Each structure stands twice: as structure tokens, then as C-alpha cells.
Picture 1 (tube, one colour):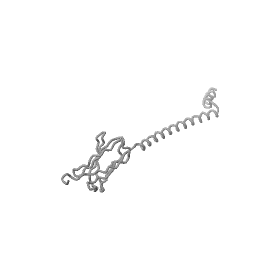
Picture 2 (tube, one colour):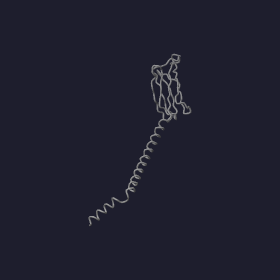
Picture 3 (cartoon, helix red, strand yellow):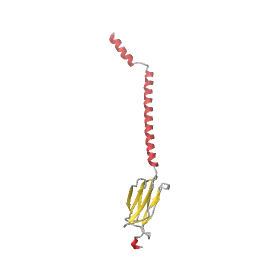
Picture 4 (spheres, helix red, strand yellow):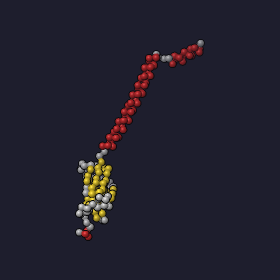
Length: 150
């Protein structure tokens, strides 16, 4: 008899609540889990979208131009130096065959100076200001003839 009573207790524990109640409880649990997963997925998507938008909307500036002599002939091999006026960091590049140069991915929130040098002679310093709203700035630099040729 004790076995019967014991098995009933186990059976009663397994059988607590009617079948529809147990199905409803299980369905409710599934719905909660599905809701939590959807919320988590939505949160991840919003975070990724925000990061993507932040990267795409970050304004950048490109500065390019041609370095030429007094006769407007392009100078190949001139050194063009760009200086960040906030931290004094300098970047430099050489002009190509057609005298062109370019600096990319510059912050629009910083002021810069650009100057070209060729065979010890420099152009005048040109300034790029945060006040200028353009993202693409063309600065053509002219290097005067050496002093002994004037």
C-alpha cells in the first residue's frame, strides 16, 4: 500500500493541473522567451544601426590641388606639407607627374595649413578653416622661382 501511495504522490506531482492548464503555461513560457529574444534582437539592430549611421555621417574633408611654378607648369616631386593647427601634427606627400597632391580623411572640425616646397623654395602658406563648410577643397600652390633666378 505504501508503494501505491508513493506512486500516487509522484503521479500527482507530475499530473498537477489539467492538460489545458499545462499547455497554456508552456505556451506562455514560449511566448515570454520569444518576446525576450525579439527585444534582444531589436536592441542589437538599433545599436548596430546607430554605429553605422555615426560612421556614415562623420563629416570628413579632402584637400587637393596642383603645385606649379611661376609659369604655371606643374611641378613633379614637390613636397606638400599639411599641418593640423590643433595638435601641430604634420603630414606630407609628394606631388605626382602632373603636380597633383591630395590629403584625405581630414576632420572638418580642425584648422590646417598647407605649404609646398621644391628645391628649397616654398609656396606661401595656405590656411583651411573650420569656418569653410566645403568637404572638398582645392588649393593650387605656386612656388616662386629661386631668388637667384629673379
